[in-house]
Image (tube, rainbow, N blue to C red):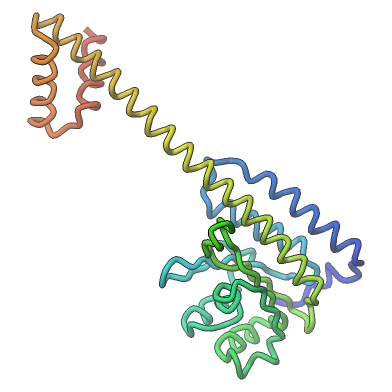
Amino acid sequence: MSPDDGGAGYTTSDRFDAVAGALERLRGLHDIHEPLQAVLQRFAESARDAIDGADAVSVTTVNGDVTRTVAATDERVLQIDEAQYAAGDGPCLEAARTKQPVRALVREARERWPDFAAAAERLEVRSYLSAPLLIDDENDGDLVGALDVYGCTDGAFDPLDTALLRMLTLAASAAISTWRQLRQARDVIDQLDEALTSRAEIEQAKGALMALNKISADEAFERLVKLSQDSNVKLRVLSRQLLVSLRAE
């Protein structure tokens, strides 16, 4: 990585406008068919474009003892993330644990976080800012991880950047919570729809067996169950296959 002066000259108004634009893009997190990783990748890209001095952004997730990077605007920063995970310490893990933003100058972090600092210096990262991503705040915050911002200039981030990033992560947390709830609701609806469709097909298959063999509903169902067991095919699949074969005749 190398310093990028593309964001130089940002006024305070520009910085607020950039974050406002990123917040507006968060409103687009409504496609429940999109994988969460893709949602987080788009969020990381929005944060990189919104925070003045940001040269790269990654998203860390914490799931029990498993910590990993699920999104990054520059794959090279994965080395910095991995150094922190391997050491079990670093500013991104500090933000995740304390649920508070952490701002660091890499040259001043050598003693406190030597593994992080060494990896960052190899990639010419000089400034670092991390903020927690929390879901379900009303339950005291179900920890998801942290948003990590990398700058290639000393002092790239100031207290205003910290506040703006915190605003961005809080909005993202709410958007992702809503996305997760909608996706869970969709999954339940899909399961119910599948169950209703399966039940209808089983009933149709029963009716076809009753008509063809002049047997009762109970007898028809017993035949279907036995065929399912003998062929090791799920009942709904067998019923569907039977109906398709009858329509083809």
